[in-house]
Every structure is written in structure tokens, then in C-alpha cells.
Image 1: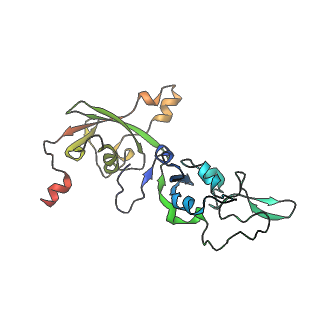
Image 2: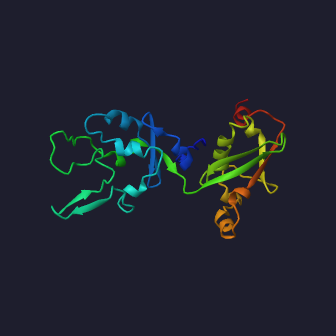
Image 3: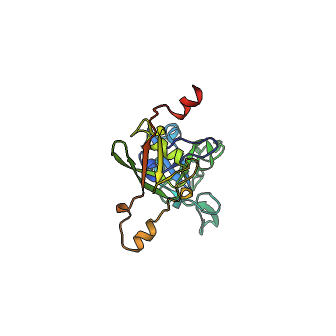
Length: 228
């Protein structure tokens, strides 16, 4: 995962969210944000009415379809028989949703409902994941990594560093031009052409942009240089 720059939200791809799909590690995304609901699940799971089951069933997935895109609240409907507005919960009774009938075991002193509680928010879901081919010109090794379109090259470097611990000691270039590590792929002229390729009947997987990295003959990281 990419390293967050100060003042910026951390971005995640759907594939990264999908890795967190158990009761011991439960992430979901909705309305463009990513949430870690592990503590919520552990605090409330079990009992005769396990109100966390619908959440756990969607662990690692996006549940934006549960929500009103305008209000940011769960979808509602009008109960025609009783003439009142109710939350729409087709997946079963849900935590922090009032029951359809009065119940003595319903606790409404929880404060903010979980979907409005920012304590669980861990980052932002990318609007478009992208793939990059990174070619190490020193070793001839190539790695294809998935990144977020909103990430800067510094954040992309942080994703790649697990393959090359000295990645900071390389100059990164695209089509011979050095990349500005404070800018995104698009800002560096590496356009997302997936849609155009698909329109032409071409497989984007066969046309992944290639970034070439060139060793600077200095294994000291930028941090080490500045603190020497």
C-alpha cells in the first residue's frame, strides 16, 4: 500500500479492500470512502439477533448501493400500511437501525450510527485503479503493480519499494522524461487510455504504461542524505 503524504487521505484500490474480508479483519467501502469495521463487528457480533451479519457478509466489498447518493444516509422507503418512513434493509436487520416493531432490547444510546461515524474511516477508495509496468534498467527486472490514479509518484514509489528497497536511489522516467514525484500519473503525462483501447477492441492489459527507473549510483536514501 502506498505511503500517505502529510495532509492527504490514503487511497485504496478495490483489490486492497477485498483482502480484509473476515470478522477479524473487516473492511468495507461506500460512497467513495473505506472503513475498517473490525472493532464494530467484534463489539456487537453474536447473540440471538446478530445485527452485524449483513455487514460481515459484505466484508471486503463496496456497499454504496445500500445508500442514498444524495443524503449519504441508508436508503429509505415508505411503509404503505403504516404510512411511515423506514430504512430499507433487504439484507436483514442491521446494527443501529430501529426495529420494525417496538422491542425492549433495542438500545438507541449508541450516538452516531456506524455509517456516519468517521472513527472507522481509514481512507478513500480510488475512482480508478491503474496498472504500471516498472522496468529496472540496472537489473532488467520488471514488475507490474496496481496503483490509485490519485496517487503521486512518491506514493507509487512507496508501493513499489517492496520489490526494490533502493527505489529512492533511482531516477524515474517515462518516454525519456524524468517524472516529478510530487505529481500524479496524469499530471506527469501518463494518461489513462484504457477506455480508448477498449473502444478499439484492444486489451488494456497488453498496453500497460512502462516507467523506466535508472540507478543513481548512490544507495543512500533521500532521508539519509538530508540528515547526514
